[in-house]
Image (cartoon, rainbow, N blue to C red):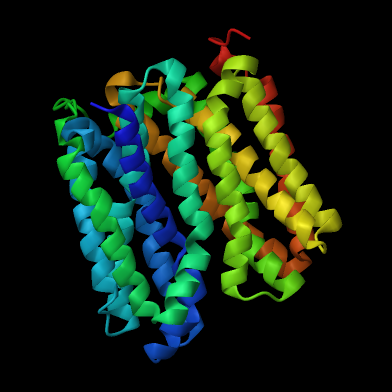
Length: 388
C-alpha cells in the first residue's frame, strides 16, 4: 500500500472539510438576503455547524477505534457530501441550519481519524513529516476558503458554493472506497466509550499536552480568526482579496509541515514547539506595531502559518504515542482541545476587540502564547523520551 498516496487522499479530504468549515462567513450576507433574513439571525448557521463539529470529534475517535478508522472516515465522507449538497437546496434559515449541523457532525470525523490513521501508517521517524504534510494541506483549505467561497458566490451564487464543495468532496470519498479499501484497518470491539478518555486525562504527561494544545488553540487560532477583519479594517479590501492574502497562512503551513519532521529530528520536539510558538508571537508583534503596512501583515500571516505548523504537528506527533490501541480516542481528544480552544479564543477575542480593539487582542494573545512557551519549558515529563 502506497503510504504517500493515502496521505494525499486524507489531505484532500482535510482540505475540503477545513475549507467548508470557514466558507460561510464571506457569503453570510448573500444567504441572509436571499432567504429573507438578516445577518444576525443567519449567523445561526455558523453556530449550528461549529457546535457539533467540536463535540463529535470525541465520538468519532471512539467509533474509529471500535469499528475501524478506514471504515468510519469513508462512510463519514459519504454523509458529509450528502449534507453539503442539501445545503444548496435549503428553503429557509432553519432547514439550512439543520443541514449545516449535519455537515458539522460528519466533518468532525476527518481530522482525528485521519491523524490516527497516519499514526498507524507511518513509523515514528516519518510520522511528524506525514502529520505536518496532512495538516498543511488541510489548513491551506482553511486559508483559501474565503477566496474560494467569495469567488464562487460572485460568479454563481451562495448555493453554488455548496454544490461545488459537494462535488469536490466526491473525489476523496470515491478514493477512500477504492484506493484505500485495501488498507488493513484494525478494530477493537472491546473499546469503551469513556474509559480511554479518563485514562488519558488522568495521566500527567498526556493531560499536560492536552492543556498546552487547548491554550495553543485559544491564543493562536484566536488570533487567526480576526485576521480577515483586521485586514478589512486596515486596508478596506473585499473578501476575495482578503482571502488571497490569507493564503500566506496556508502556504507557509504547508512549508512548515514539510520541514517540521526534519527540524524536530535535529533540535528535538520541545525546541521545535518553542520555535513555532515564538514565530506566532513575532507575528502578533508585527500586527500590533507595523500592521498598517501590507507587506508586514503578509509576512506576519506567513510567520503565523509556519509557527502554527511547527508547534502543532509536534504536539500531534507526541499524542500519537499516548495510546496505540486507542489512537482514535487520543487524536480525537487533542483535536477537540485544539478546536475547542480555537472557539473559546474566538469568543473571548470578540469581547476584547469590541471593548479595546484589534491591537489589544494581538498583544494579549501574543502574551498568552508566551505563557504557553513557559508551560512547554517547565514541562519535563512529556518530553522525557527526547534525545536532544
